[in-house]
Length: 70
Image (cartoon, rainbow, N blue to C red; front, side, top):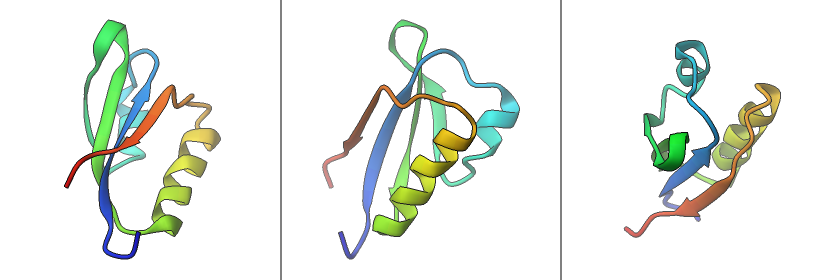
């Protein structure tokens, strides 16, 4: 993943404004069945790992993560 790609993360429940604000590079939108979807451009593997670590630090479970089509 050298040139980056768009990713989508599904998390359970509704995020607070503070939690959503921890991901300024992602767009936050309501998801299915009361969940929340965060999506956006991920530069490289290190950026992806950093996002996953941020979710973990905030105790936000990632139910699903997927790379979106180009």
